[in-house]
Length: 396
Image (cartoon, rainbow, N blue to C red; front, side, top):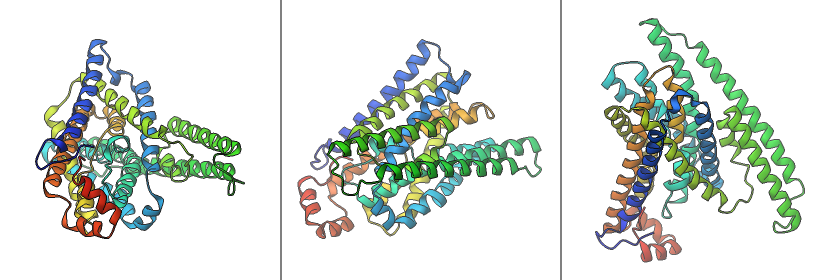
């Protein structure tokens, strides 16, 4: 964290370093694929399994950061953003892409990048000055919109393919809805089984010393349970179940999960770079990325209309993209060739916009100090007021 002095370079240092690291790691991925002539779209199974593991780490880490008390307090907003918010974002992005290309398959791209990447959020999307309510809402949004967009992609891919084949007649959606129902049932069974096993590990722990030998053994068993549940979720692609399970699967893991999310984020960025060697559509990618970032600004602002200025900006500028979009791009590239070439530069565009706009925001906050609404909140919290007085406007 770098203190801000007036309009100096402080607020830009951290975003610029992040941007350089992100582009650098993606560039290394591209160079590796070019040097060894790797084309992951030719045989995507291994690549898809690897990035699914990274996504599972991001989902779990993101949900672990959710304050369950805050989530219960703001449950209406959380429910709104992971349901209506996801659909509205996808619709806004799809409208932009369809207006530009006038082809049904471009509507699917709205779903493919509508989510906030949980791995990016867990690794770099949080700031120390983010309020607990904003962190909880954005963390839940990042965690639960991913599996929802995966389900929507399966459904709308069936619709788009039928629309193209039908040449204007009403497409058949029964196959997509059947897959949706089956997916939800399998995830529900996974959550029930994980919940029962977790309950068994907590029997007799009410008065147990967490630092005793028995407490450490119990925690080790619980960590093993989490790893096993994660392995099953990855193998069976039960990511919605893993996200729900992470709400109660909470062993003590210290900083291990945080470091794991950081490492997985960089590996995911490298994996993104591998896709770039196959050829890209830079104009389509930039348009898709800008549409996704703009849709987040609209939906995030609407969802936080009654909250403080700082919380509104946290949600409005919270769009990040990554592993989920990569997975969906690979899934879509077979029925709709060229999807990877648009989604890969779109992911880069979204993350660069995230870093640039949050850097601009940090610079402005450093020059102006806390917003009027935030000053009122700080006056009600002496500890936060002292912290703000010592380092108001620190880098985002």
